[in-house]
Image 1 (cartoon, rainbow, N blue to C red):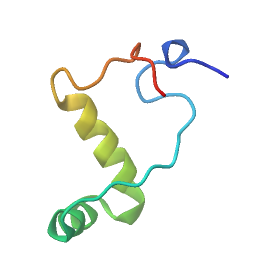
Image 2: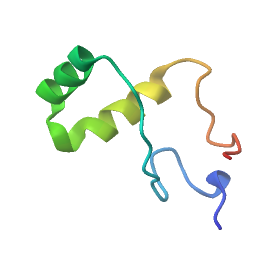
Image 3: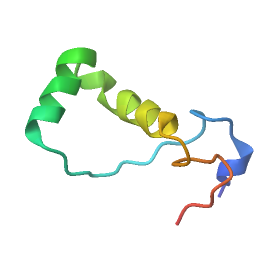
Length: 60
C-alpha cells in the first residue's frame, strides 16, 4: 500500500470516514459549497488549521 509521504497534499487515494457535527454547521457548509463539495471543504479546513496536518504524518 502507498504511504502518505508518496503524495502531495490533496493527492492520492481517498478514504471514506464518518464524522459528527452539529446539524446547523453541516447545513451551512452544504449551502456554501453544495453537497458534492462538502468533503473537499472539510479537507481544506483541516489543512488550514496550524499544526493539525503534516503530509508525512503516518495514518493508522
